[in-house]
Image (cartoon, rainbow, N blue to C red):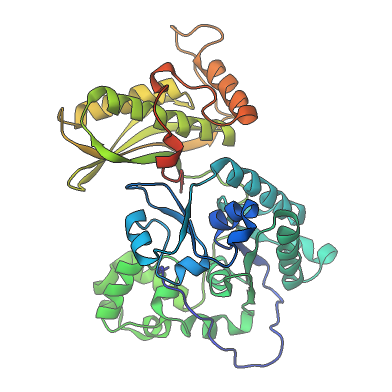
Length: 418
């Protein structure tokens, strides 16, 4: 979906939308990180606010007042401040976001066990089993919105539809603080009334290729010659877009799916060339990645390293382990080995990222203890540090080599989960 905002197409009927058969909800918090941060800064409501770090960091979130100036998430902070110089810039509060996310997901689970989180602030819900007790899907959506605002002090938008992709589109069109129902009988008309950039999965570049081919609306996708569509976006994408244009999406809500990967990255305010500095940065990233994996109860089989040089060239390398892990020590060693193989000594590094991939549920995945590890080894120590961090804040316990590392959280990029 393009970063541009779109307007919901007008309905042909003036009657209230019929939500019969619209058992999939997509619930998405409005400007989540910014809204959560402003809970403790009520005097800033109504003003442009940007959440992000300093220097070369990127925008984590922005209020709608800032977005009206063109500020978007993942935009370099320097550009965001140029676009909206009157904005108030605040640092992210990741512990607060995780706390609110847990509470919001608990609200969803009070409605249905069929909850598929997509990130900290959005999820699909399948509510067919809740209708008899809680009412029709639109009523359930309204109740969720009211409860989230009442309990958490933030707003959310809801899409109610017969399929996942329609529900996702509808929630985006409903923002901020709204709800849109897409009736079964109006699904094809609804989606074909939209520009191609409004489709979930069509980003800015794909939109540019489609428009260049004369395909501007979803209706154009439905009527375009197959050869023209395939030439613009490729064979697989063309078939997928044609399905969406016909309102078809057979995917079911997958409860509590494990993310494909989990990780952290960091853009440095000054390019790093020193081997010790790079190793400390890798250790900090491995620590954050593994702490998140332990908090979510997952293990990773593959360690991936991303490196961006000073000329913006970016490369990624990965290594699959013999057994899955959530150990900072193991992930750090693997990432350091990948960097040693990849990086010529002294080449300036602008960004590093460490990810765990091939995730599995830690509760059912055996973990092999290495022969040189004591009975109460590194994993136990790291879990103890997690518990201390939960009580006293992240960074309360960390490796000695990271002491005096400044304020890493102020330069940290948002943790990735995809």
